[in-house]
Length: 440
Image (cartoon, rainbow, N blue to C red; front, side):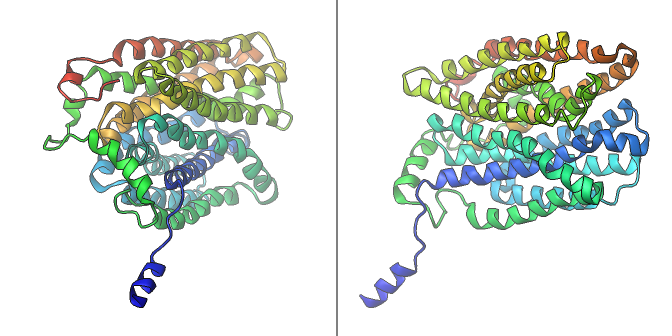
């Protein structure tokens, strides 16, 4: 009896609501991911002067990141489904943390482009990995909120990055600024390796929480069925709806994250006085993430079907991003800030649903693959957008404060078109009856 008591006392205590601790570490990964990638965009106005880059030069450096990020999402998504979430994200974060540290050695256009390409390859696993983790740890009524939680890290990371990076730049220069997110990544890895295991294997999960999670997981498993291949997935309209949900929205977000400081300067607003404007859209997007996930979960609990609850947020987001368009009529910092904030709030509500759709529609062994395909679609759209933005803004610099007007109009319209296509493609079909996708 004494020996049994000693054994029981040696067993680790369970952590209450462990799944939300898992959500928290996914959130932290996304924060670091965005601090890392935002470092270049924040320093872009200064690096452009130091290295005499045109907008096309800067766009091409950003595109180097996007090419690797786009291709990497599909490859890493499939890899994540094969090697598992824990190992896959360990490899990813180790990779891009090393690259971030090495970026401090860059000495011009070519080396910046190479390091950004390598960074994009490493960071591309974050969203497929996070989506897969959510599918492994959360029931469907909570997946929207869980996706909002980790996705909100992009907004938080973007919001804190200027306050973290600019003081370091002004005191020690840009090379030290690139070291910081790399160090943060290695700290995250220590916590990740200790905390993340599958629910059925985790030593710190309570029996009640394990049973709750696995009950729904087991219900939706496709026992005996082979994993769907890429070509099988691409035959499904639901897959294309998922790809479009990110492919026609993420380029707008990346326009805000990567070009907004340059856009403000073109509007005649100094970057120091416009620091509030750089920060507010990220905070608004953070709130929008939780609004989209929380409201869709609330609607499900009120009896709405899963599909109807998700699509309600898609409509809200697609309409709300149109608020970008009125910014072409003003150079007032506060009005621009408000409109961009409302637009990014709406975008983030849509984006949360885009991130959770793979977990709604597919079983765990295909979630990361579909998430990766949608990320590749978003990357391709962003590459095209960035190339056009760079060339068009350089060609129309004589327009002064109206240099970016046509770009902003298109940015407001594209997610609205995406909204319509998602409503048409994401629905129950014959593939649903065959068990290839889940019923919504």
